[in-house]
Image (tube, rainbow, N blue to C red; front, top):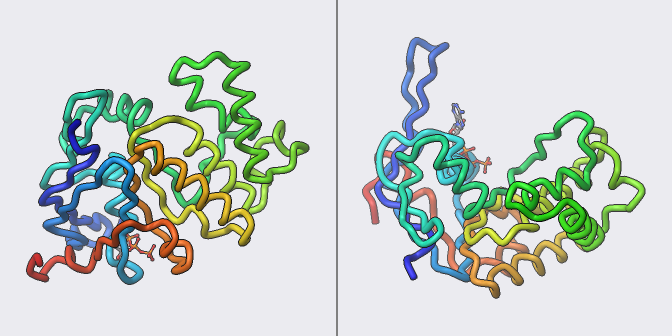
Length: 235
Ligand SMILES: Nc1ncnc2c1ncn2[C@@H]1O[C@H](COP(=O)(O)OP(=O)(O)OP(=O)(O)O)[C@@H](O)[C@H]1O
């Protein structure tokens, strides 16, 4: 079976159009691969480019060079050069992403926000909602909130909706951007269990965890993003 995710020679500059086209090189020569069942954690100081790398892997940020090869339904394709339609298909079937903040859609109930990725994969509505409810219970979101849109939820409640939505599918690659940042110890522990279950199921995970304790528990390997800082020679 091909490796789920192989990143090589990826480069990213930000161009500040409001500053006369000033070019800010963020990362260069990014290279790593993530095996099935492995959790690789991006580490390094604030502002070094960790979130930018996750956003490039997911196709939210364009890439100025290099390859992001994913095993999508038995075929290897390059997210760095894939057409928008292909990127959406990869997101639906292969690659999940738990962003730092939930993007709420007005009037959509929390339970439907969580069930939506299952519906997109063809799961019947009743089953999708039942599974969404189970996931929200596991993350201790009070049932009274399930039918409400999450826009008024607390930071930690929104993050739990986001986590439930990200972990509900059987995507083979999962990107996690600080999933425990707004959570208390009990809910962080639930997320650690969910990550362990994904690893046991063979999912390849790339994550960012500022909490050293969580990082120590979930990481199989640290990837030092400072090594990809432009100007530094690759190790
Ligand atoms: N859309 C953008 N436009 C311009 N600059 C950006 C953009 N996104 C990120 N940057 C810049 O790229 C650099 C890397 O940011 P990034 O968020 O990837 O760092 P990080 O390592 O995840 O930081 P933190 O640990 O603080 O979250 C920063 O200097 C940031 O200002």
